Length: 172
Image 1 (cartoon, helix red, strand yellow):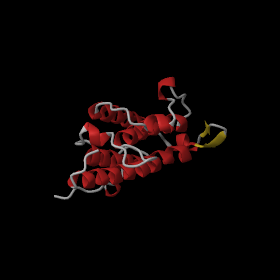
Image 2 (tube, helix red, strand yellow):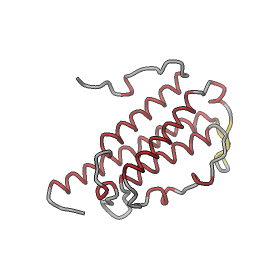
Image 3 (tube, one colour):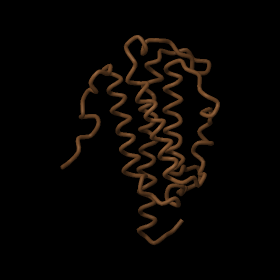
Image 4 (cartoon, helix red, strand yellow):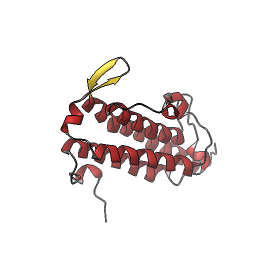
């Protein structure tokens, strides 16, 4: 049986319509991570295919961290010091066990889902500060899914490159 993709699953009961769309986008991201990264050995998880490219593990760490930071910014909350990381720091290969990175990712995405579920129309219209910019929260919150899906596509591409390299007998 073919599973229905997240964008065809419809509204999430009890959730604002637009927030439901965002949550479906995040479901897709989580399913991409599960499908394309969860079975990788550590060497594939941290493999960097070319200069200035990012390893799958770094992309996963960045998606989780940035999604949670964007949620906090979009709801006007302070970002805890432990989460104040720049993208290069999150994206860099560390060699951490993949299971640990995937666990932190799952926990961060769960926090985002819990928070999004609580939002109503008034929360989306509130103005929030992102650096020097004051914008309606809806724009920051919408960017969570767009940003995550952007990097999820990089995970798919990097995994395909890893698979092709491995299939040809080349080892990193």
